[in-house]
Length: 239
Image (cartoon, rainbow, N blue to C red; front, side, top):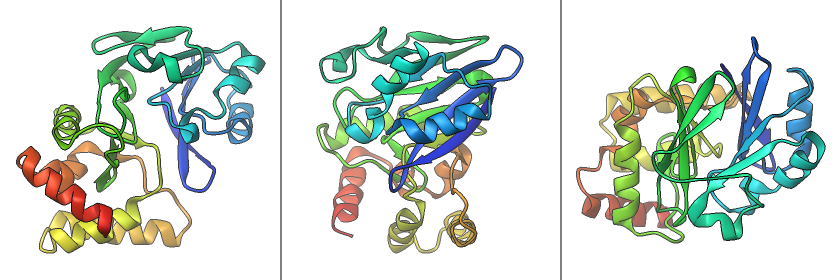
């Protein structure tokens, strides 16, 4: 299964999943329809499934228009279905979402929002984590607690190290600046920050990253407990 970022809005990424043999195609968190439609033309011009991680407008804005055009089924959190587009498949922790020949495992990851979920697709070695985990960062605590977010991040950190971290925003350069301010002697972080600078200078995405890289360089994954995590998150909010 091929996984590709689709830039949208100012700094969002939707994610395209395409399995060439079967033609199965899905998209994660479409903020708007137009960039998705352009990407779909490159892979056969159909859409089977729309996966949503949380209810924020910049992650669901294109879902209804895409369903109307392609008849794609919309999948999202059962706990949050009252504030998502109408769900064809409401899911919770431990559920599996069929994606043609593959399957997405549903992980509940509250913190950024109370109903946030992530999707792990072993066949693609990919994690679609919305605004829970970013490269070198994590999401703001708009609804959940530091303890909830810490536990969510630990859950994601336990996945295989070669997992692609497919997050919802191009925040890596600013995240790197903060990370270096709190962990300036981390060799893995300094190397990643230099790589990010090269990628952005070339106009290229900094994601997906590998989970092993995040475990080595992301200060929020390196926090030993929820208290330290809370302090880091408070510092980042003011950075």
